[in-house]
Structures are given as structure tokens and as C-alpha cells.
Length: 262
Length: 272
Image (cartoon, rainbow over all chains, first blue to last red; front, side):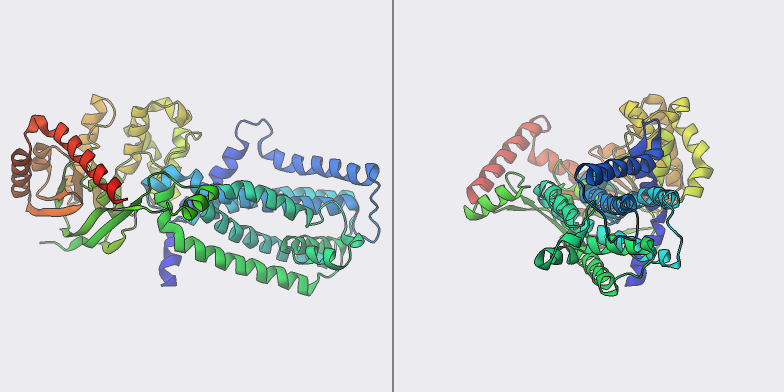
């Protein structure tokens, strides 16, 4: 049974690649700097956020083993992947409605390719991070290899949530507006431009139960030259796995009805 | 005869016709509370069974709304039937909606790869055939222009050229013999005819019994979602023609159909 699915996936890999390419190409079409924007934009926002949160608001960044600007950059890059990945995946079924109505293609390819192409852009923008780390004098260490774990997990987390969202979106457009608000909430509970040092008790727990925060934390640890929180990462891993399984479950349960609603 | 290449067994397709599309939570909850959330069930197809053997050219006959397009969409995999099963052996190329996988912002050339992979061809294969596709489409330099600037005829020409680049095992034609201008029509007809010579299996939808008699060797007849005849092409076509003549005067046909539809709607409203 699973063999059939794998065979089918392999036979559609060319389309998968085309869809990922299309996403990237069309995103930067008609802009002069093109894909360079995926490098410039994070740096600019990092600069703005760093100035705002250190100079203007006087937020100190004591107790961090990495420069605060780098701390912000990591949070920003991870969050913006999560946010753009879930949003494009959410709209993927509706956006491809004309195609779905006319030709047969395994439908999960749409949310998958959307999550993938935003992921590729995210990976490219990581060049910034390494550049910034070198400029700010971060010493290379073996701990940096840990970064691979949150990098892989964030893809699954985004894909799983995207599958759930796109399923719901077919039946209720409201989810697009709701998700806008929810992802803002997630942003503020991911401690992107502040540290969690000031929080205690239940407020700290809110951060700890946010899997995205756990992934960002793990990534920052990797660049701080210190080991990751094993339980935090385990929690994030289990959460991502559960979300992917649940995402596939609802998607498969409802996918044959998509065509009647788009 | 040859082996069975397409097997349709007891296929039924049910649609829920809600009077309005409910696609937001507010409306859904309100309707749920007011108990207005009932759908009219509508069987577009019911208990359809037939086999197609390799090399058969099957005409699909029926009046508008008989369920022909639904049947073809089920066979090509776009719809999943509510009940019953379809087994297909081999590659289907549906020439139903040419260029359905096109992206408007992409150029013609980019769309060759996009639509080509939608149909299941590999990138290397498409690269190899690229020139052939462009040449057949007759688009010339327009191939580097975004599709959104194409005329509908140009788009259909490109779609046809990509879809027919290999000989499929099963070809589904939905009155597409009217693609593009006259010159291209001639060219595409020739291409389809050459495909038919090579033992390809064809499903052909048309209202035109003359065309069906000319192309097909077998036929099926649908009415109101039911299969009412299948068999040798001339028998079915004769039956179809007789049926139309008996039941309706040809000139009166559109009027009567409209009347019938109105009555049906009334009935549904009363039931609902």
C-alpha cells in the first residue's frame, strides 16, 4: 500500500520540482534585484529591529552568548519562514483551483510544493546569518551542527500546519483572517526581538509550550556555542510529528471533497 | 479481442447542490442553527458499468446534462466517484481542457515544462521534445511571451501540442476538434487521426452522431445519469436518433428541455 504512494510520489517528482521552481521564480519576477531580496530584506529588518529594541527602548541583552543583532536575526528568519510557509500552503489548494478542477494531480503536492519553495528561499536567506556571524566575530564551534535539527523540524512543523490550514480553508475562508491573528500571537510568543529573561511562571510557560519558540531557542543555542535543551527539542520534534500526522489525516479525509467546494 | 484497458464498474457520482455556497463560518453556524443546512442530493451518474478494450474507439452520446463530462472527469481522475470503481491500465491523455495547468505569468516555453510535468512527462523528455512542440504549435517567437498575453486560440494550440507529444494509451476527446484557426484545426485533426491508427483507445464525446459514426466503432448512451445503451456504434446511434425524434420534435427540443428543467427545479424546491 505504502509502496504505491511512494511510486506515485516518485512519478510526480518532476512536477514537484516544477512547482517549487515556479513559486520561487514568480515571487521575484519583475523585481530588479530578484532573489537577492531574500538576502537584503532580513538584514534590513534585523538592522531596524536591533536599533529599535536596543537604542530606543533600551532593552538590554545581558546573559546572551550571542550578539543581540544575531539573536534577532535568527528569530526573524525562522519566524518569517514559518509565517510565509503556512500562509502560502494555506492558500495553495484554492490558488490552484483551476488546475485541480481539470487535471488529476495528487493534491498534497500543492501544500507540499508551497512549503518547499518558501523553505528554499529561507535556506538561501541563511547565508545572511553566516555572513553576520562572521562579521560579528562569532567563534565557530561544533555546536553549530546542532542547527540542522531545528532547521529540519521547522519544515515539518510548517508543512503539517499548512496541510491542516489548507484543508480548512477550502471549506471556510475565515481561516485566512483568523490565521493572520494567530500567527501574530505566535510571533509575540516566540521571543523574536526580546529575551525571555524577564518572564516567570505561567508567562514563561507560554514560551516553553510554543514549539516554534523551542526551535528558535535551539537554533540560537547552536550559534551561542552551547548544547540545546534536550527536552525542549524533543517536545518540538514530537509536536511537529503529531502535526504532520494530523495534517495528513485531515487532508486525506477531506481531499475528495475539495473539488466540490473550490 | 484485445485486453480490457478501461473498466468502469457500478460508478455513481453524487453532488450536494446547496442553494448557496456556504463558505464562511458565520453563515454555516447561522444556517445550522436555523436548520437550513440541507442539501439537495443530485446523482449526476448512477450505476454506470462498461468495459473498453484496447483499440476500441468509444463514442459517448447524450443530451446536455446527461452526465458525459462528469463521466470523463471521473475517468481522468479529477472527480472521485461516490460509489463504484474505475480501473485504468495505461496512460490517459485527456484533451478536455487544453492548457488547464498553465500559469498565466509564465511564458509559453516555461509552461511547456509546467504543463508537461502535470501530464507526467519528465523534464529531460520535454527538453528533448521542446522544439517539436514549439514547431507544431506554430507560435514562433511568441513562445517567450507570458501566456497572459496570448489569445485563447494560441493557448489552445500550445496546450494541444504539449498534450499530444506522445501517443497515449487512452485518449479522451471532448469535442476538441475545434481548436484554433482553420489551418491548425486541419493539422490537429490529422494528428488525432494518425494517433487513432496506432491502436490507441479513444473516448470521444459529441452530440454529432455523424462524427461519432465516422470515428468510433462502439458507443454508449447516457441519459439523466444512467447508461441506457451500449454496443456497436451504428446501433446506439440509431437508437439515440430515434429516441430524440420520438420524444421531441427536433425544432422544439430546446424549448421542451427548458420546460423540463424548470419543472425539475420546481420539484426540487418543493422537496427542499
